[in-house]
Image (cartoon, rainbow, N blue to C red; front, side):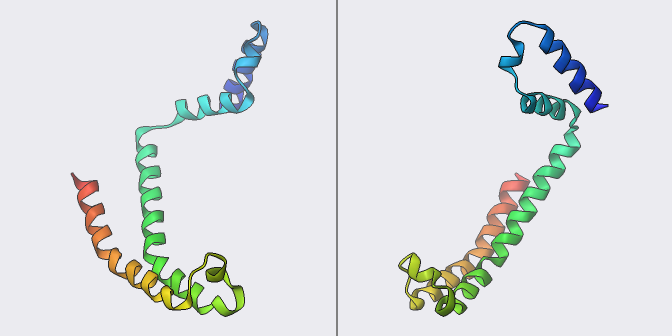
Length: 111
């Protein structure tokens, strides 16, 4: 169904003079996708984005500890001029920020 609308719109725009210069194929697909979305879909996309960011935020301290653990082999900290002793401060900051960020998100999303 979407493909038929796309083809019909594409043919219609081809018939007009200079219209195919204004809209590319990607623009036509984006127009069709926006028309087909429902409000519930936007809410689900927003929720999926937030939950993915929340999981990444919860794993951030473990990622810092993993980078510290592999520092001798990978040298990622040396590439950014971070000493091995400084990794514990990054990890501590990430651990301490979990609760305040969750409280902030609670207030932001429920107000």
